[in-house]
Length: 242
Image 1 (tube, rainbow, N blue to C red):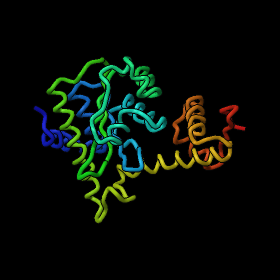
Image 2: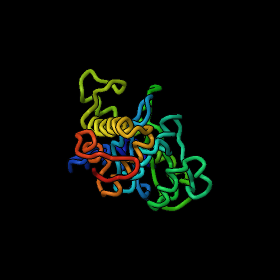
Image 3: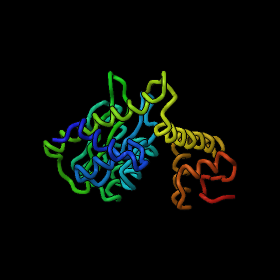
Image 4: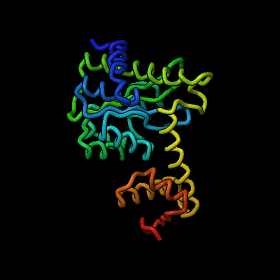
């Protein structure tokens, strides 16, 4: 049986290769449970803050999509402080996650389990586990999933303990956590800026940013930075530079 102590020992031994502990945990979880991907997000009472760890491209894409869309299992697990998921994303889940489910299926993911990360009533985020085939986790896998969730909480607290007099309810974060949050703040700022400039709602402004990033084969963050710097102007009618 996989325990939290065993997980922490395993990722600690591999930390010497330079990968953040949050990524190491996701990679270890994917390999241990035979998953298609694992992603870790940092959240608080205000909502989704940032993706702070992934096992690879599939998980990274699906976690980022949830941030952009404002829906999905990662958000729900933290929001309701309980494990959520779907044993078959192709079976009626469109009503629950109408935008996320098709994106997950297109990425080759058929099932997902998201475990909340919290301590003492404080919500920290979630750990989401993606599977390429429909079906439930067996009892052993469910136990392991909870153990990885426990290990993720320990990792988050460990990182914060390395910053004196700081707790997870404040703005200051360990660099491994703070950098993704800062990047997401830039996207939020660009969304607000575009909303005003193009006279559209925040949701449409974010969709315009994402559409331009997709069409130009660029990251959403890079597009947001160009918008904020005045290097790029996007209009509702088109997604090209003036």
